[in-house]
Length: 325
Image 1 (cartoon, rainbow, N blue to C red):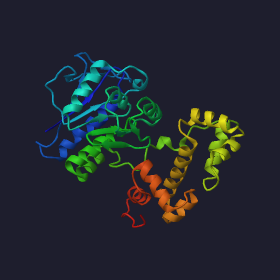
Image 2: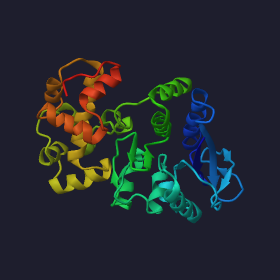
Image 3: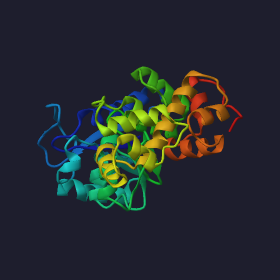
């Protein structure tokens, strides 16, 4: 039996804990009795902790227990974790389990706890889309992939926001027992076995509605209406009615990214929409969405989403993979 543990702390996000643990628990129904998972919760001391939703969680294992051994060790996230000090006991526990667990990592903002423990240096990681820019600034030695649902870098595993912990757990079940078991678990839980693309909240199409007179609203509208046109910084500043310097400051504060990255994400999201809803050739999709070529679109997809456009389309629509790649 594989030993799985999720670390908790005051203010933890309850779904970061229960979602992945439910995946591992459900998997036991589809595998041999001696090949499943034993799930537990670790925390400081014996007292329950109160989650951010008010729920009280009781730990099975104390951080101080040096005899416990785990096959998969995860730290959950919490809404306040990016802006609060991480428990010294949790930091010490993470350092200890990272040295002896074959797979360890985080769910959602738990990546900040990994960073505090010095476990993100030179690693590719992800976290909740809202906090990815802060994670990158605070731990500049890490390679933060803001739009990934989950990442694997050697023994280190990290997931995006909240329910993405379920995706991460399903990926680990597939790694241990095959895709058929993971799909069976996903069906039982009524979730996607493998979500495609990235954290959809990043999509400019889903951005909050802004005051139409706001310069940044004008930029957003201009980008969406001119994906094939000139979207240089100078052109965007002109659309906003601002100087280049003022535009650069204002845009960074609003979007938490550079104009170039915002434009690329807008083009990727436009392409995703077309790939999901049409059979349009990749070359045409690339042209219509502002990429210079299908090759450039493919490189952007792989860099941002971890899949090629053809693979994205085939998996999203349940079709055989295209040879267009």
